Length: 478
Image 1 (cartoon, rainbow, N blue to C red):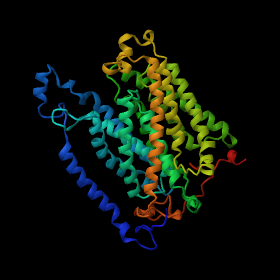
Image 2 (spheres, rainbow, N blue to C red; image 1 turned 120 degrees about the vertical axis):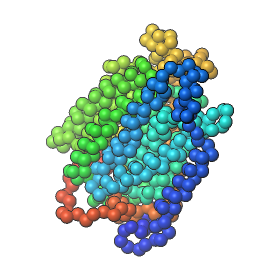
Image 3 (cartoon, rainbow, N blue to C red; image 1 turned 30 degrees about the vertical axis):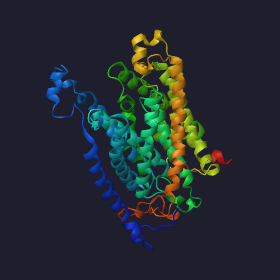
Image 4 (cartoon, helix red, strand yellow; image 1 turned 90 degrees about the vertical axis):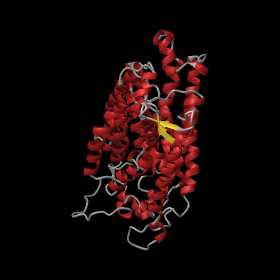
């Protein structure tokens, strides 16, 4: 790592690297045009034959088209992907262009590949062998890309855009495989993606970061932190306006119409509320002089929404959602204070955005909550038809009991984590090859390596040590 000098910064030039990104983009887009032309068509609700479909299926109104049920959810999820994730990473004082710009790049890159990969696994039309897509496919592609953006947080500022595209290519492929195994083969429920999206994406990113460990990263450590305005911008532009408001939609977007979607939104809402109060309390309690740390408020307050994802449409009960939110706020905040410094110091995992605390551990908690909730489901709580509808005990799975379903939910969590760690190690080894134009150790966390950056009029003020996403905590040093 770090042996190639990219052509955008001062110093020796490498003309091979200069053309890598344009070449990858043009070749990839050409391949997508060919593959979409060969395999992808509109589904019946998008195709111009819709009027005939209405007559054939006795549909009386266009309002029954899935677009009118799903598009509002798609719109909100899409905002989270293209705005929320990117702006949450703008905390770094010299890497905001990279945070939002590369988020934009890999999201657009990944969505196209996700539509193909998920289509081949889930949406092949048996009559003509084509992938049929509609608005729900777009939501699922966004979910797939969300796992890539979670992994992006672990390597933020330390890799090149080409490395990110290679990483996304493999991660989307692995995501489609583990999603098919978890949702189709073992028939686990994971409406909000605690396991399939968050746990998988987090441990994939952490494994990549472990393989790409930079022992001399201290050479650019002065840039691995925030300044006042960058944290304020990340907090206002992302956390409040986008991620926090839209997590309920994220968890309920593909739930069943009616009670399932309604229940998922309420469970997420309550869990997030409990997480916020717990995060404020723990941050103040464990920080010097009882002051709050903006890192915790930006990130840990979202952990409850992540953890309730698997059981979002279950009868978790309002008090259960509050309990999940409380424990996630506690564990996530303590993770930023103690676990992140420990992982870098002892395990050689440099987790730039602390994705283990926001997505990894809450994702595992979500899997555990889902397994317990499924195993404890009873007909008296759900009703006979409600139990069948919630867990889809139909067709090949009509004889499955809640207790057995709980076991499969636990197995699904193990599969997601295993795919994440194993896939991340494999992809990390590929990314170690010295041909991707990655920045040198002393050029990490700096936009000037890949972006045209305007000159600053005034130098930035010194950054307090605690105002940093990856700084070694004072308590941990004692």
